Length: 213
Image (cartoon, rainbow, N blue to C red):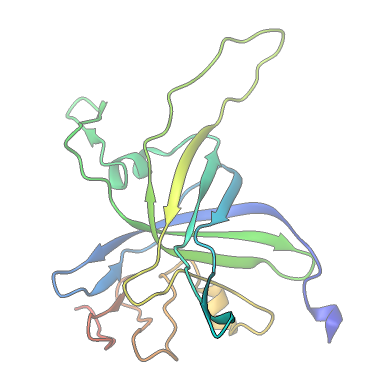
C-alpha cells in the first residue's frame, strides 16, 4: 500500500484564482477558477500560534489560534486578468490599465498543486487577499535575466472556519479531476455544498447548501 502514496513533493504549478463573493446574508460563492500561469514559487507561513490557558498549576487548555497563512506567490508575470479581476485595475477604451486609489481589492480562492512521486497534490486556500505588487526591474548586463513579479498573499479563515483543503491518497477520482472546474467545498459538511452551477460553488450563511440558477 505504501508504494501507492507520495513520498516527496516538488514543482509548484497549475495555479488558479476564483473570485469570492460574500452576500449580505453571509452566503459564500465562488466564480469558476481562472488560470494564473507562470508560477515560480509559493511560500505561506502559518499565522497564529496555539496559546496555553493555565489552571491548577498546569496548562489546563490549549487555545487554537489559527489565523490562516501569510506569504508570497512569485509569478513570471502577473496576468492582466488578475490585475482587473482582483487588483481592480481598470482597462480603458484604449486598452490601458489604470490603477485607482479608490478601488476595493477583491477576495479570491487560490488553487495550486505540487508534483509528487505518485500523484499531484492539489490545494485550495478559501479566503485570500493580495496586496499590490512592487514595481521593480533592472537593466540587462552580459545576459538577459527574467525579472519576476511577487504577490503578497494573506489567506484567512472563512466565517465558518474553513482555511484550506488539499487532496490526499484516497481522494475521490471525480473530485480530483474536477479540482479546477469549481472550488471544492466538502459535501460531507452540512454547512457546505459543491455544485455544478456554471462553475460556481455556494454555501449560505445558515449552513445550507443551495444551487445557483
